Amino acid sequence: MDIDGAGTKAAAAGWKAPASMVLVQLFITGMIMLSKVSIGGGMFIFALLAYRSLFGAVFILPFALIFERGKWRDMDWCAFGWIFFNAFIGYAVPMSLYFYGLKDTTASYAVIFINIIPLFTFILSLMFRLETFEIGSMVGVLKIVGVLLSVGGTMVVSLYKGKSLHLWNSILQHQNEHTTKTATNQLRGTILLVASSFAYACWYLVQSKVLKVYPYKYWSSMITCLVGGFQAAFVGIILRRHKSAWKLGWDLNLVTVVYSGALATAGKYSLNSWAVAKRGPAYPPMFNPLSVVFTVVLDSVFMGDDVTVGRVAEEDEVDPADEEFFQEQAGYDEF
Image (cartoon, rainbow, N blue to C red; front, side, top):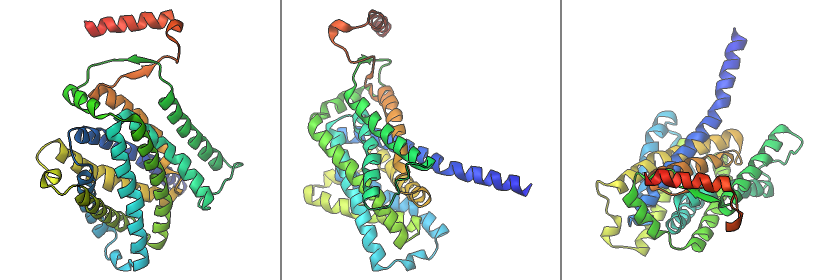
């Protein structure tokens, strides 16, 4: 009976890591969708970053006080220096680059660049010897397969464009028309998104170092959010000092800030920190392809972006069956 109980506990523990990473991808999906609408509506990006980070610190603080009571006293200047750098390379830089890239593109396009984070993370982990390249073991094979699938999926979604299938009208039709006008520079947005992915990959490596010098994930995440918020606010005040840029009302912008702070910042950083401590820096990015699926579906439902299907072909090579299907679908839309 004791053996069965131990086996049950081990099985439950084995599911905690992947389940927490699926939750992280759901948090990221909601953050991307809400942020795209808010940024498209004119919200100042650095105000969004500062507010969501400060809200995230507030949400994490109770967990730090309950589960890691008094551990803040163990922080020295070395640990604080790593946390300061962690906030800079893991929040202020990648999120500002990502949001500006999101502003220039669409949510379903921006999310695919999260999938190249595993490639950057895996390469950097090997370079700094934080990961071992055990190609003969099952763990090593799974890591390599996960990286290849992530990068391959990114390339397919980026370059493979078949017929556009419009399945339904968007729920937020007005917001869709407005945000479509804001996606003006695909090339600039792509460069910013790639740079964001590289900076975010560096964060996983820095985070593994932070957990070694200060192994308290709640206090570490809380102070990271707090410092990252002040970093974003400092840059934002330099760029735009007008009060209207920093004003929050009872609208979707406030919902975006609270959601992003509670789930996409506090929840994500805490769960990622825990997963990095348990499974290593290359583990969390392996689940990033899930956010592509979630975002493409929700972006189509709420924002009305078309889902591309079919195959890459010239106009004179269209399959008659495909043509008949799209004509039938067009008839449904008119009806």
